[in-house]
Image 1 (cartoon, one colour):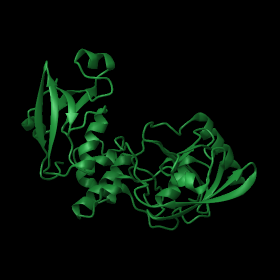
Image 2 (image 1 turned 180 degrees about the horizontal axis):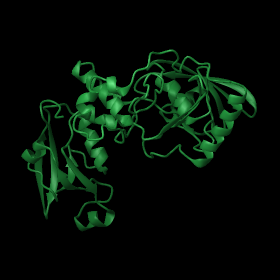
Image 3 (image 1 turned 60 degrees about the horizontal axis):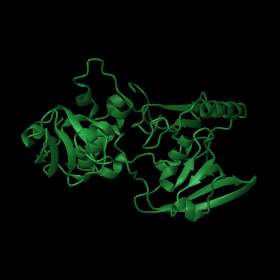
Image 4 (image 1 turned 90 degrees about the vertical axis):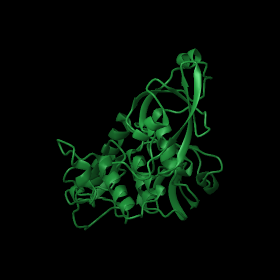
Length: 327
């Protein structure tokens, strides 16, 4: 991201991959990329990429760029190197390479320094799934499922509908839809135009509450700004390993492989310990999900109980998080 114009290339910086289709005047035809929580490549496929490329060739021939207010135009160039928190983040990097997630992390760290950070700011670029709309990975305007009792189900959308536009923004891809949702207020109405059996229809989705949130944001690098971490790394035990240690299938079992947090060492955790409960929770987790829990649920200075299995014994410990972020 070094030298990239952030006011032109606006996207979900937590992603590892994103592409834009544009003309020679920095006007957009479409976006391509995005993911669901459970799968980094949920909407990246050879078929969907080839499909949008063919569509964009035709749009370019007719000069049909996005005419919507949702794409940036005429903004003064701004690059990652200008972000207030970036210099400190790059200080110990030999190659000074700025990753996509560094942009979002730098913005959130600056907001935190100004006491303007809110955990909601982690949940950027919601996807159609946040509204209860499952989009086909290969044909990314096709609705393949609707979640019951969701804003989508209440609006009348059905599987088989072909989305054409959302709030007047042409939709070719999953990422196009996500762009509209990023610019949509937390409370309001979303107008979806679509085809059903070759007939044009319109549905209006009513949005309120925490619809921008998702159940498992543990993949997001920016989550590390949201709150304290456990100060350790580990691996999830296999079903066979859990059986060996007497841990029921479906319950938490994470073996500590590395400890970097002074607060973690003070709590008494050791490499080789198996974490079997976290803050009273015994549900199965990945190491990323274990880190995400205190980042979203605890504050700096809080104490969190943790139960580990060491050999054949279980020990109840307590992690007291630092009073402030440790950079």
